[in-house]
Every structure is written in C-alpha cells, then in structure tokens.
Amino acid sequence: MVLDKLGESLQGALKKIVGAGRIDERLVDEVVKDIQRALLQADVNVKLVMQLSQRIKERSLKEQPKMNPREHVINIVYQELISLIGKGTDVGLSPQTIMMVGLQGGGKTTTTAKLARYFQRKGLKSAVICADTFRAGAYDQLKTLCEQAGVAFYGEKESRDPVGITQRGLKAVEKYDVKIIDTAGRHSLEADLIKEMEAIHKASLPQHNLLVLDAAMGQLAREQARVFNQSIGITGVIITKLDGTAKGGGALSAVSEASTSIAFIGTGETLDYLEKFEADRFISRLLGMGDIKTLIERAEESLAEEELDMEAMLRGRFTLKDMYKQLEAMNKLGPLKQVMQMLPLGRLGMNISEDAYNVTKEKLSRYQVIMDSMTEAELQEPKIISSARVTRISRGSGTRPEDVRELLKYHRMMQKAIKGMRGGRFNIQKMMKKFGM
Image (cartoon, rainbow, N blue to C red; front, side):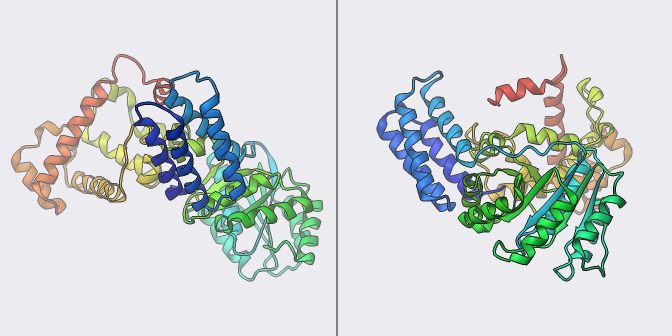
C-alpha cells in the first residue's frame, strides 16, 4: 500500500487509544506525540504538524463526545488528517479534454496512459495525443503504452510543432469521449517551455489541467504546483510513485497548501494502478479502517458477472471449480496485499506481516496448481476424492498429499461460510455499516 510506514505508525498510535482503560490528558498527549513523529517522518511540514497536533489535543479534551470516548478521539484524528491533505479534485466520467503537464522524470507519460486506461475501465472511449516534441523517445514510449492499454493514440513522430499536433490530433480523435493531451515535461523556471504549455492550453481549451508530480519531491511539490497553477490554472494534481517513497506525506500536504487539490494517485507500476483520490477513503485506509468502497469498485471493473454463479453458490452449490474461479478473480483485483489493506483489518486489531502476505499468495497459487491436476468430475464433486485420488493429484501437481488435503479442507470451510449466507441476498451496505463505513 501507499505510505506503509506512515500507516503503520498512525495505526500504532490509535491502538493505544483502543486498548486504554480510560481517555485522559496524559494518554492524549502520548498519542499526539506519536502522530507528530509519524507525520514528520513522512516529510509533512513542521508548522502543519504542530497545528494539526494542537487541534487534535484541544478537540479531544474539550469537545463533548457524541460517541464513546475512544471512538471520539479516533474520529477527531480521522477528520483532522482529512483536513490536512484537503478534499480531492472530482474529474467526472463525462466527455472532456484533459491536458497533462509536469516535470521531466515525474512519470507524466506513463501516467497519461494510466489515466486513459482509467476512463476506459469506467466505460468511456479514451484517446491520447502526444504533444511532447521535446523529449526523444516520448512518441515511441507513449504509443507503446497506449497499445498495451488498448486506447487510441495520435502523434506525429517527425513534427516539432506541438500546437499543430494538438489541433490536428483533437480533430482526428473527435469521436472519442475523453481526449488526453500529453505535453513536454518542463521545469517551472523554463520560460520557453512555459510559453509552449500556455499556447497548447489556448489551442485545446481543456476542461481539466492536471499536474503530474513525483511523490519523492515531498514539500517541494508545493512550489511547483503554485507556479504551474499561476500559468494555466491547475484543476488537479496526480501524485505518482506514492507506493515507493517516505516523502509522500509531504507531497500530499504540500499540494493542499498550494491552493489546488489531488485528483489521482499512482499506487503501482502497471497501467491499472491509478486511483481516483478521495481524502476520506485514503485516510481510512491509512488508519487501518479499510476502504470497502474502492474494493467494491475495483471488483465491479475487474470481474465479469458470469465468472461466478452467486445464485447457485448461495443455494449451497459451491464446487472446487467455483473456488478456482474465485482465486482467479482475486488475482484480477491486484496484489493480495493491496486487496487485504482495503479491508478494515486495523479496526479489527489485526496486523498482517509481509511474510504472511507472501505465504498466503504462495498458497493460493499452489491451490490452483493442484486443481489443474484434478479431473472435471473431481472439480464438480470434491466428495469423490479418495486417498488414492489424493496421491494421484499430488504427484500430478508436484505437491505433497497434505497440500491436497489442506486444499480440500479450505474448500469445505468456504462452502460452510457461503451456506451461512443463505436466507437472503448478501447486503454490502450492512457489511459496510458493520465496519463503520
């Protein structure tokens, strides 16, 4: 997940509240100091940290709780962290033109393809225009990424006229819902490139101007966001590489300070790892409260309805073949660690180590290999698998007989759990309410 260390530190601070017998000033002071330390280590501005700490302390001790004292303090921490990073920019799912700007080396070209892929996953036809004539290789890189994403691409490899390319490109992709213009990476002090950016903006009249910033910039993101904002009016920021830096907290808070807001965050290298930024969901995940909404949305995008026959499963018919499809479906949702961190494990007092994630991932992969060695009859009716069949399956899959038995036991547990859901359709709203969403 993004900002792992910050999340772990903040969750550690909140656990002191959860496990406390009573909430008093001494405990609040201790928790506030832990939060200060966590935010400073994540490169958040010292002044902002001190202001946030003071507000948490004052509100925790002076406000009249509308819930039990523990939840009252946790809720204040949650609200103040949301206030720190600001509300996200809402880039709607509607026909629009988007102009991408940013610094050299900030991941702008890759992010452009990710954004096109994001709209495609949401059901819109997207196209990308390569107006970066400054960087050698920009055309080839973006064209390749667009082919991987399955989105339309327009560019003129030999041309050095970015404004002309933009105008001709917009006409060429006129039938598409979302047109995304990738411009040359530039520094805020490069006057010629700034003028070029302004000329492209005037020629395209985009609905959104999105600034791409590397999370590793930390607090330096504020000045870059301010200068770009003065030039063309930034409507939102995309922070990239948020999964691999300790300075991400600084970049998140700095953008909010620069009178703009975050539209998307990059959480991984592949084209599907671009998330719409919503402060409440982000902070909820950071504090270990989960992010069920995002998990549901990702599932809806990734999984076809015909993959799992839920009606048959709820009637008690859950075969090994159904379980195999479930494991394949989980793989489509993304890395297991990201999926698990969208569940409210921290709220439940559960901590899962990196080793545990890896072991679980290995087990799920092994289960699929074992099922590949089963016959159709065995997959449909696991009860027929005798000791002799277990031996044959283990030899065919290159695993141990106890691995096969472990899989069968796991299947029985899953079957029992699904049978327990009978008596009414599964209500996701009730589940979210149960987890405090």
